[in-house]
Length: 306
Image 1 (cartoon, helix red, strand yellow):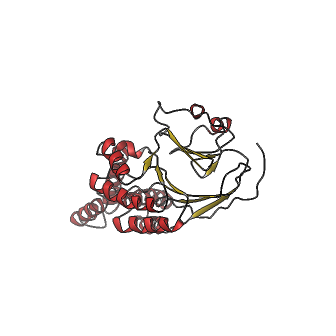
Image 2 (cartoon, one colour):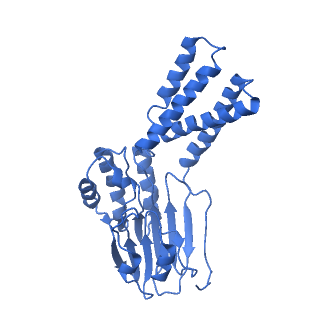
Image 3 (cartoon, helix red, strand yellow):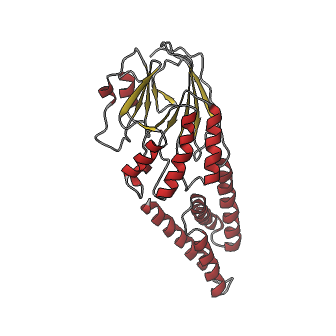
């Protein structure tokens, strides 16, 4: 994350230098410097939408300067600001607009009707504030699934211990409706506090951590894997999965689809079927608060064999 922040800072400084040079003959030094300082102060905390605004503005400005051959710098600056603001505003609005994605899946395997709710990439508090976190949790409570799956990146580099406690206290409310299972993502490896403190808080709120572990219920086998960057994590074959159960692999960054198919995995990371057989009486609701799915997808009545 520090490399990304440094890169963004360099881009922002580059934008300021470019603006200063373009306005050299238009405005006096004090006004130019004031504009540049104001821009840097606006983006200093590296919030995603602000950083993206700076990057898009710089890119648009460079393109427009090439197109206009540097003849109309003021127009280029105004247009680049308008374009980048429009792009970032659209992204910001879309990020805070909830899109629920439902998959209705079928299988020939003998399982009872099951509803699963999957959520990931909360990135608290960088991408979500306490009020929105409560709103997200209230939305999830209404789903009323058989179990919830927390699929990674709930905390990150900027998350304090206090923020982490607030986050999992809210998510712990879900356990009043159904069991909740959690797997780690790559951002959980970069936290400020210790992994033990994170584990204690998760367990304190009755959430079950699956760290290369599995649970069984209603002829469904759920496997929660370590992140693929962990070279010591189990291979799919180590779980000795059979065709007698419906096997779901919860994986932060799905890898080895062919290996999973070979080892009887039916569903990988909740939303990606790893075989051509579709599924019977299995409804999946996915919800990602930072990377929304724009369209609703439904799969049913497919019976292709692999």
